[in-house]
Length: 96
Image (cartoon, rainbow, N blue to C red; front, side, top):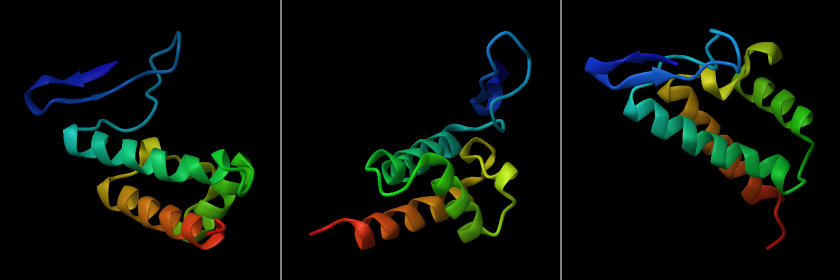
């Protein structure tokens, strides 16, 4: 784990390595990453599309390259976009 104590920012590492799982995140960014994952994971969790397909869809919506589309690397603004896009998609594709 990498930690910046003065700003309460940290990021975890991959198991048995020093490779970060994402970007250094303060409390605000951690909150939005968590909310983004909760919103986005519901798309494939509800079987609205497969996980790989969902990440491909997200990369197209954000205009990012597929291999760079990881919520762990996003800033607050991109996390907010993920939340909105995912919520809209779920609302449009879930029977009422």
